[in-house]
Each structure stands twice: as C-alpha cells, then as structure tokens.
Length: 483
Image (cartoon, rainbow, N blue to C red):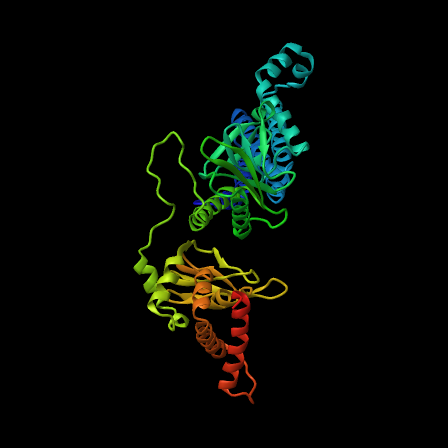
C-alpha cells in the first residue's frame, strides 16, 4: 500500500502520549494560583485591612480555582493516565469518557452550590417536565451512548478491526461513547456517530477471524482447455507471496459467456488490509502466465477486431542465434539447428515466478535472452538454499531435455526475463536420422557434469569419469527417445 495505515495510527498514538500529562500540569497551575490568592488575602487580613466584600470575592475565586484544579487532577488520575495504557481494550475509551463526564458534572454541581448557592438536587428529582426536556434535547446523545455500550459489550467492532460502514472502509482506531473513528486507505479519519452503526450494516473483516478470502475473476477463450486454465490459476495462487497454503486455493468455472469462459480464483490471506496488494500480484502473474501458455483473454464478441496470435512474435533469426549460444548444441549442423529453431518458442516470466520446479518432470531446456534467474535447491524439510544466479546468455534444463529426468533444482526469475525454450520433439527426429549425434551430445553433457561435480573419487581419472558419465547419459537418452 502507498501509505500504511499503521503509520498514521502510530503518529496519532505518539501525539496522544505527549498530551497525557498536560491535565496534571494545568490542575497544579490552578491550585498554585488559588493558594497565591489565599496567601494574599491572609496577608491583607493580618495587616488589619477591612474589606469584607473583597475578601468574600477572593474566597469564591479561591474556591473556584481549587475545584477546577482538582477536576483536572482527578481527570488525569482517574481517566487519562490509567486508560491511556488500556487502550487495547475495547471498553476502555467508553469507561474513560463516562468517568470524565461524572467528574465534570460533580464539579459543576458543587460550584453552583458552593459559590452561587444554587442547589439543583431538588429540581432534578421533582421536576418531571425538566427531566423530559433534558431527555428530549439529549436523545441523540443518549442513543449514541447506549449504542456505544452495545458495540463494546457485544464486540461488534474493536480497535484494530478492518471494517466497512456504509460505503466507507478502514481500520477502527477508537470506539468512544459517542463516535467510532476509522482510518481509511487514503490515511483519512472518518468519525461515525454510534447510532449509524446501529441503524446500518457493518462488514467486519477482522472478527471473529482475520482470515480473508480473495476473489479474482478472469476470462479465457473457448479454445483453452479448462483443466489447463484451472491448473495455471491454482499454481499462480500457490506461488504468490501472502497466499496461505492451507486452506488451498480453489478455482471455479462460473459459466460460459457469449465469447468467453468465466473463471473465479479464491485464495486465503491472513489479513484483509493486504487484499489489494495480493490481488495486484495475482493479476500480474496471470498476465505473464497466460501469455506464456498461449491462454487467451478474449475481447467481447460484439467488438470487431483482426485476430492475431497471442504473444509477441520473435524473428526466426533471433531464436536461431540464441540457440547457437548453447555450447552443448555445437555439434549440430545448420539444418539440424534450423529444425530445433522451428520448434522452439519464446516465453516471458515475471519477477519472482518459478520457471521450473525441483522434482517436476521435464523435457525442455531454457536459454535466457534477457533478465536473470536464481537457482534454488530444497531439502526434504522444504528449506531452500541459494545456489547461483543465471544471467542473460546462460541456459538450464539440458538434462531434462535429453533424458526426461526430473528437475534437479528450482529456477526463479529474479526480474522480468525472456527465454528461448526448446523441447525434446525436435531431437527425436534428429536422433532417429543420426544416432551418433546422441553420443556427441552425451559427451558434452558428461563434461559439464564433471566440471560441476563437488567431489570425485581420487583414484578415478578425468577421462574415466567422463566415459562413465557418458555411458550413463547415453543410456538414458536412448531410453527416453527409444533409439
């Protein structure tokens, strides 16, 4: 995401921490001012001054300042300080607000009684009309208060939840007695009256479970076999970072449209806030995989267009020159290289996408024309070890090409990469016409294996090692091509 919601929330928390001690300082300032007034009056009295009116006024100011100072101190001691450390609990903001209101109301009642001589207790207990007026004027406030209690007690939403209220979506930052505050993806704060939550529909994507299911809809043409499309989408989801392996991704065929087949991919992620990032990554990989496997995303049938084969056309000379860079193909004659080039294809991979996977059966060889790829080997526990990085001009997969054996390693594109891919079909025809060519290629492959072997028997000579490896590879080539 461009602006992370956690950043805005963290800045807000820091600001609130800095403001935590201000009520205490203000309360102490009021009390200190009141004591100075009191000392001044005491000094005047001891000096013999006779000003009863002034003394009475100063006494009332002293009482007022003392009460205001105590209000600030009590608010800090009872509400601000304790509940600032209990913010993670849903009910804490509401209790803090109620405690603050009780302190304010108590202080107001005391000031009216002590300074002005007004006693509101009989009025509040005997006047039904006044009570009705107060209730009617505060009905929205009372509704918000009880809705806030309902939200907190029933755990409708809580701080940290990702929710949608109406057409607004964001992370819950706080639930007070009156409002619920959201932080949106745009890093904006939205305040909802609590009654809006009681009257509307709330989508909570974080409770009772943060597990969220991402849905991606995609179309393919009628010419593409459904099994291939489904397998491709499932593999894309499995390889995408952030998608959970359990429960596994699923693909459904929704329906056959006028010009396409509708598919839906469903994958599980750990947190809804990553929804857009993971959808973007999946859609990006779909484009690359569909392009590489010649799966077409069709245009609407009502649109007239001149159909061209999917993918970018690469000149025959480009493919042929790329194949000449593969050293183990050096023994092949020009006409044989032409046959292989005619059967070769060019595939494009996106960054982070697996080109081949360890343990899979294969019959293709890859020549990197642009980009780069990392070679990884996984042990039985599934832990991967980095081996090397292959850059443009390197090739891999030759053993699977000529012997059909499983892949020895996983090769992952380090950046957007293009490869010329050749398969064993062209070699079957070449080996049937010239069986000796299999011996030449097996010798070259044997030399490559001996060059990369980590340890060899000290008693064996290099020629013996190459001869043994050649016989082994030649046997596998003949078995694979039935020659």
